[in-house]
Image (cartoon, rainbow, N blue to C red; front, side, top):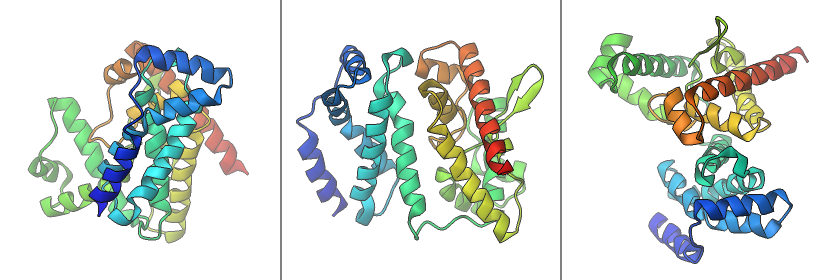
Length: 272
């Protein structure tokens, strides 16, 4: 059923050809001038990107088209905000927007229940161990190696990792004049209190929504540096620099500014 539905949809969007980098630049200039037809052309040429990401989400066949429609909304937002000044291909810029709209939709459904606090604690512990192991050894840790470093049984690690694709790694730190900050600092410590868990889930959504207000490049840098794309480890400064087309140092400075902006915004919200 899923293949039939997606196949039919793919056939309907085949008529929209892919764009070259030069064509994207020209369209972005028209978009900044208020040309709605340019927005439509940029969106239509990237509809297949949304389908590709929807498949990676491994959603049930019953919601796959709803998920694609949500992703298309994110694609539309990205198209309206895209600028040639970003020095990156539109698909790279749009990916975080598409993924965020899809994840919000999935998290809003009753079948996607918030993880118990202990389970989330274990997931974050495993993710920290993965990141540290990768930094020390230059490769991903195996399940037995993760079990050894975390003290968590292998079968439980497999179970937790199956949940972790929607959990962003918020614990990567950046330093600025001796001070370290991370997106994890925006959230309260883990607790077993149901009330505190609800608050944490709300604040996590706040972190995601605050990203919408950031300038395009800051938002893109945070998305990849803090693993909102669901990879096993957060991307390095050098990896992100290749994606956004600036130096690693420029990425670091952009990341610091973005995290500080978000931290200040969250503190204002908490003070209300």
